[in-house]
Image 1 (cartoon, one colour):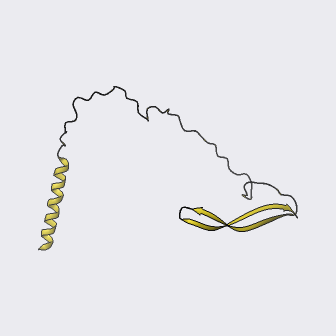
Image 2 (tube, helix red, strand yellow):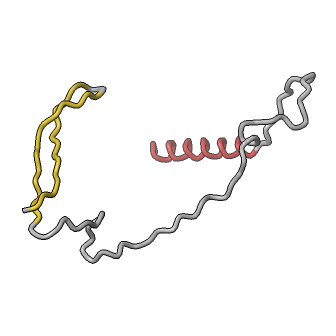
Image 3 (cartoon, helix red, strand yellow):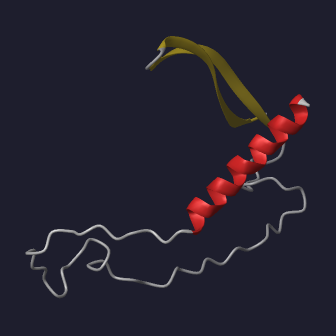
Length: 106
């Protein structure tokens, strides 16, 4: 019995909302004596419209996928130094790891 009452109330509410949405909206009168320029410039109309640039994308030609490609020479050794440095951020100062590497002849 309660289910029928709830279902009936829900259907009545849905019907009322549909009828209210179907009624045409009444226009409200605006300011009458407001002259406007025929072609008022706006920010969008003053900008030039250009077609987007086309970018050519070339695939990498190196078989090993290393980019940038450089050959440090025979018997080259990679030397790295790792340290911790302070970075100042809005949330506070934090300590982060930094690594600097370079190639040297071996």
